Length: 294
Length: 320
Image 1 (tube, each protein chain N blue to C red):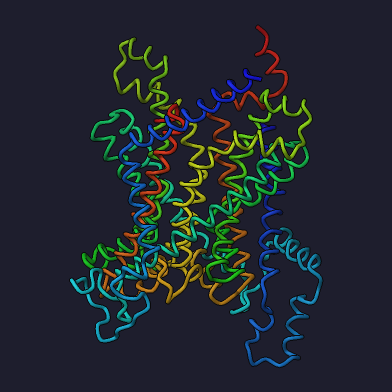
Image 2 (cartoon, rainbow over the protein chains, first blue to last red):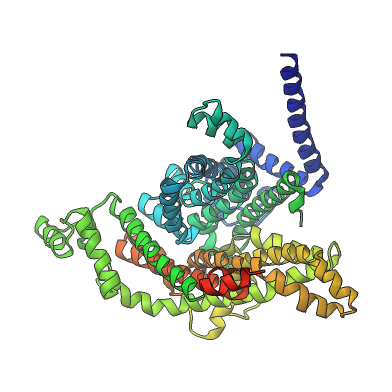
């Protein structure tokens, strides 16, 4: 009895240590940490937006429309006299939230499809993977646009369109990992002591197969943000008066000759956010698997 | 090799059929009556009925799907536009060359610029070349392509007046859309080229090549690069998905009358046959290019060629 207990504690320590080394490696990567801080700051700003923005995002002031950047309006005002700085601060609420929810939803469905497909193999695997083939035969953004065109614009519909098009990515990654994990001895041992299939998947296979999804998820949030911006730009996604960054670009495109600053700032917000997500994703990948580092 | 090609070709058929069923079904479940879209809000009940009868909208789902697929794959007919009444196929065919022109120029640009950037980065690892290349690559994947396009319009059309901001009146009109569209792929290609070059450079045969006294140029281009090419080519295929996706927004930015802008206009007018046609055509082209990439892969990598070579040949090879 004593022996098993000891074994358990060392196992636990091992896990703890592994986690610690990963965190340590991540903290050694200064660029990734800076990126993480910037993303955190953008999230905090988005949450606190109603309290800290100088103006409300939909406050129109026709008298001061299309003003360039100044001390009163840091990023200037748009065609309806709304403060662009405030709108960008609010914008994170839509751009980031939609991207994060969409990716989480896609990961969730991807986990179900990937684990079932990889664990059971055979016919089930074949059917799921052939369906994924069909989805992946359509370029990501085109599929998103098609689904979004059918569903219409709006928060929940956009999330759905973005999530569906990313499911194949995650299910394939997970399936590949489940395939390697399921042949390990401990999974066979679990089968030998009579664990049900569901228990084997959730208790033994998934915890050992899901880590690559962290990196893929971070990278996908970045790519979904770009898709969302394009979606809003072509008139789907999130529409005015809501201050989503892509839709701000869409609204400003008519003023490209006279007031180009209206196009520059929202684009910078998107680029900064996506850049930091990519840097963080790179950092996470290196921390989780240093072998892969270049 | 022949078997590999045939297998790969045959596999394309169910995928394309699947794409057609998927897209048709997505558009089928959309709420809203196509007859009302065609006839307008003020149409009488009789007019609506006539339209429904003519387009077969009263038929059950499977019959409509069957008709649609029969028309596409046996007659190459994507139906007619709800708003203009014209043939979708004809319109797609006039627009396709423009989209392909932009898409393939962007693809060539991203390969021609991206791969050397990656090689420079790998060869001068941790040096200035590496840093600058990777900064370009990171910025490339992080900026929305259509935004790069907009910035280019501000700089080159509005401020400097060098290039036309929109249209396709001259070849000069294709310059900015292609460049704007190439950034995403360029960045991905540079990162991939760098990491696969780094992997190869450490290999023993590269050390051997150096030890033989070959010049650095010969080591890189004759020994390292050919072995690093495989992942780069694989990426080129998925890059095209990126480019086709990006083309939709880019064509809108530059008012290029290609398939992308056709699709966007159709979405705003809820012109479903056009949406279906554009998406399916883009998916078919994308699948064809992926096929091409896979085949090149087969030709370049002797292992894959061998895997699908005739059984006889393999047996001979396996003999010790």
